[in-house]
Image (tube, rainbow, N blue to C red):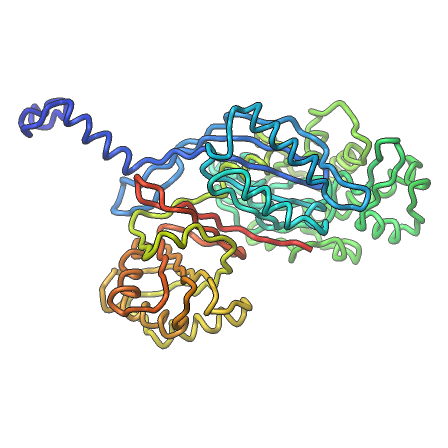
Length: 499
């Protein structure tokens, strides 16, 4: 046993101090700690938080993939009403002061922040200056903070940030997560901790809201659709009538419960859908809720904030009880679910087997993803790879001579002949260009493929080839600068959905 006692190093001819230095070096190569930020600018509220995320390389196999082993929220901001100007624009001046004050109160500067996301959600996405504000705040918030916006992404972030995915994993069952915000409701069907599908529709707690003087001047388009369906003339004056608001909330709740239970929606429900309907491959055994309206669903919020959130929550709870026998479970996080998701769940880290021919090309932002699906080492041919890339680019509307990310899942052994076929197909499809080409591979072959492309085949483009990243069916990807140690890059897969 003495030979296996690693507390004794004299048999190796090194001192205990030298052994400790070696152990520390190994730990640095296999562990990464990131300070992250999540900033949520929503239909109703805006807030942010800072977190620490610890990632460690898998040690159970030969994978170079890094996995999250610990997350800790270190500071949360107050929750404010999202400031809008009289012309409907997001008030960038007020928001910038709020964010700057939050950084100061937390004791952070932008230089301290390694990664994270600014996400615009709900009705805020529709504002004319939404994208500009998203990208400006992202560029000013840290080293690799990404601008994101989109209903599918928000659904995923809410499912993770609320604790619903963790709850599903612990229970070993299927649940439906319902995130009800100010302007939209997002659904996520979760089984054994995995999100199977997501959807969104325009039902929220601030579709009708009062201004600073108490007048019901905020009337969103979705509320007008409901009023038209009910034969109501919706104005600030008629919205002040509690009975009018009750009828609108009752109808909104009917649409929402139809979507939650999957019983089929009527014409109004279809008009309020923001994505395709949720695909229900399995039936949920329970519901979880998050978002601002969920505070009323679970009875945690005693106050009113000049909107219809409380009435909407009451109607949804009543109609669910009348129409179905399905329990509702508090997953742990409610109004802060999306911002927790934005800070802790947006960023992946590549494997260590990556290839970057010129590190000056990083970071890259908003690369459209052309996904090739699964590439099998036993059947791969350069002709099929090239055809698949061209076909995917055409569907995606992407120019292959421009910066673009090619995504694929590699299965099989990393034999040189098979990898060369993949590289030949890429070279044939993308051609020469002064702009870099990026490959994102789920499988530990990124370095090999990149080297074959750049060195062996002499592709006349700078090459970024990363692996250990699982691409979702979202729209864009960001890749940050190389982090040394351990020699990996942060990656964000996201959507950019603006009106």
